Image (cartoon, rainbow, N blue to C red; front, side):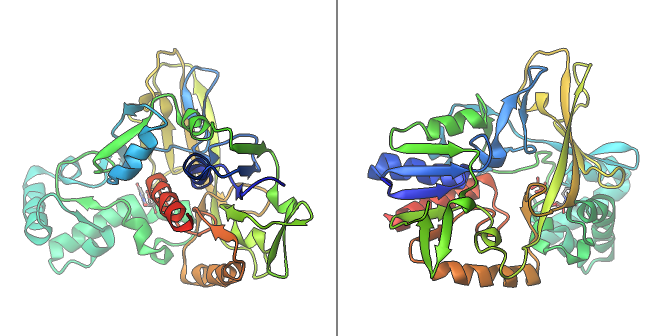
Length: 380
Ligand code: UDP
């Protein structure tokens, strides 16, 4: 067993760690990945219609973190892409996040003028306010606007997405899509916004292309990695190196404190015999259909093709072993349950937890790259 690090999972968390350890510290790294490909949920490929599709749902890179952007720029060229989303509400498409642009789309000019002035007075121009905060506004008209946005855009979408009432969803989740006190129609306001020019899979191939890195695909690490008396064993032998685990923590500990709740998606792709299916990359359907949104990938990665590929996302319960745990469900109870697992992990000196699943946090791509770079510094 000639390796310094064993990394479980080849998503951003595992791949960035592998790259840093191999190229910066000359460490020998072995990655074990359950799926038949690298890249985790960022995995993309060109489909039968010639369109580059994100197999696990739309991934739009955006960050304020220059270090992260520059780090990734070492492994990919970028296609500048600033994401826009519309929501189908009351029979037409309106700009999301809710902004002054949306205000004038849904109300007459006189009412929109009044609300705009009040929003600027209360929250300042060019700022962001969570819909939950807007619902608590003292001013009756702002409060009513908060209710309107909550009802038309959030409450039903959120119930669909998470399978629980919006009131029970962590407020931080809704705050990801704030109300904007500007005319900005972009989904994100970050300085750096782009997608890898040749796709995420290519980016990961470049990240992992190092003689010190070996990868086993289609292998379930939990069959070969065991914890006995707070020690790690790999293929029956005590493992003295460091294990970086990016999978589900409850699974690592045989679900001894029960299955942690995650949310899954049934992702249904369709190839349509038309050049474009919709005008936007993403159209949200807060109030109708069982799916939450339709993504048309040609808007993200432009290509000439007589066909369009779309993706409908049907949220569903996560069932252990049956589907993919896309999102942790950060409620008070689940956080407590997670902490019990984390305490077990902490007793193992050479075990590091990293990533959306292992840390049970709703990380964006840039967050997890930043976190991996930090953990690398801490470890070395
Ligand atoms: N959300 C909503 N309506 C929308 C868009 C978002 O209610 O039109 C809520 C929903 O609860 C969602 C959360 O805001 O889970 C975060 O949205 P985001 O687009 O960040 O979700 P992701 O792309 O990560 O699935």
